[in-house]
Image 1 (cartoon, one colour):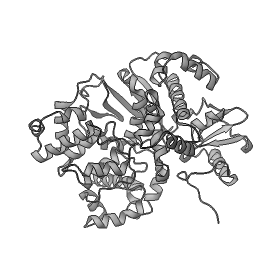
Image 2 (tube, one colour; image 1 turned 90 degrees about the vertical axis):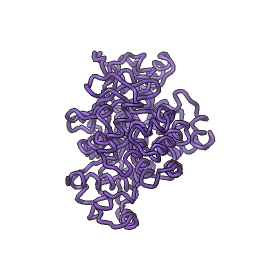
Image 3 (spheres, helix red, strand yellow; image 1 turned 180 degrees about the vertical axis):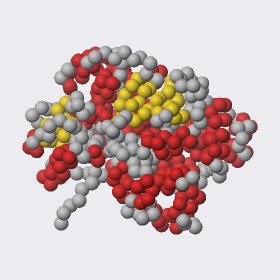
Length: 494
């Protein structure tokens, strides 16, 4: 029997049969495998993405790795042409590897820059030993090695694309000292950071970087969804450019993202004020735009359902619109209960005006950040009612804000999705629709589905939620994407 492979399967690089699959993907420069594996070439001691355009090496010279850290631990240096730091992450769903993925997500966001492995393990409900074991099983390296490779690749990214000084790059990447950064960079990559930079860039008005993804990307539909569910003071479109304010800790600023032509990359410009939080901002930005998904696999799976196939064909590469901040997304979801999108946007705009923070941007009208959970939690019920809420809805908003501000509920894609959905539904006024919608967008759950949604029921011509749930079994584990496709089809139809 012929074995059929797809890029959402985990292959074994030690298996001769699976090595053939890796090599065929490499020869085809198959974008579906970008970020799924890396190839180290013994003759050059360089590792590449499978989409690299350099000359294809002979099979016997290739070693395969599931992640960049494993390739570097084996003594390979990153390719300067295909740039492994631009590879999209592996967003496949596998509950058996959930803790390892959680840990990797938090490490990428800088959890080990200021914290310890023990603290990271405790936050995941694991012991040090358990954490090291699950990370080693999934990635073949220790958590510290994973963090170190992440810092170096982020530094390489910044040195190549931005105008930051070497010292700024070192600290933005999570290194405690420039000396330590220089030493590690030289030992790992065989060159100094300044040698990599090449010509000195001169633009200091923004930090400009590239973000990789697997094509196709339905950019217009994705950004329109995000903007329609925000307010122009927080998020807007200028042509094809997405403009968005963001607040991280005590820092506030803006981002500007636009697609490049035909190369599977976006250009992101980031306010210099956000430099101290760059390590945590980049994963948030990838989550906002769902850049680590594998749309060809997802679309192929969903198109098997004849009722979904026209939606997928009309808008290939549709992503889950995520969030830069879980609370503001959850607040917007609660404000959207039982009202139109337009009415919910009006309410959200009032919250931004009352509780948001003023921020300077180069874009007229884009001038406030969304409110934080702490700011809304500290408001009185009367002040919340004055925004246009009923007393019951004001209580829901306040209880939600307090739970998030106090850390009782953590809206983090690296968190426990099931436990978070349960905790949300324990709050007054939050039912399954709101909880699963939040899971979809704030927790990056690819399989969330609000079965009572009237739009989904209408699009699927179902009379009851139970009918929609039964129909959705064929969509698992990608029901969130099915929901986005159905909502998009309703909007496209006017």
